[in-house]
Image (tube, rainbow, N blue to C red; front, side, top):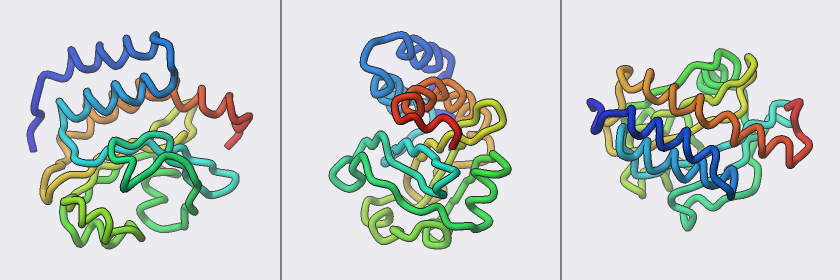
Length: 172
């Protein structure tokens, strides 16, 4: 899929949102809106990565009934987790089979009409802080979405750092 809108005004809106009160929710909500307008998604989540515990934790969801905020889930070693958390590179899955290959909750994802995924690591100081996850209909995401998605992810780093500061979890 090609970009749906000029990313610049949306990048500016996200950057401004970082200065608003109500952090980090205000920043994550702005990312949801902006990335939806520019790249598109049906499901949008923000996950914090706790490396020491090998877990991730959802801190934002645009579909809280299906994917509520809170709770941790294990991050098990795989080529997919190696790519995201160790190599710090985005992952593009284009089909329902790609969803089934990497997500234990693939049935729920598919039931929401999502058959493609774009996982973008949020990186700071050579550390993966977590991921921004966009899911949509089959074939939606392409490699050409990565530069813009990565720019949005860079703007998310302060929100992740704020969560870690609050949790006293700055090392993981």
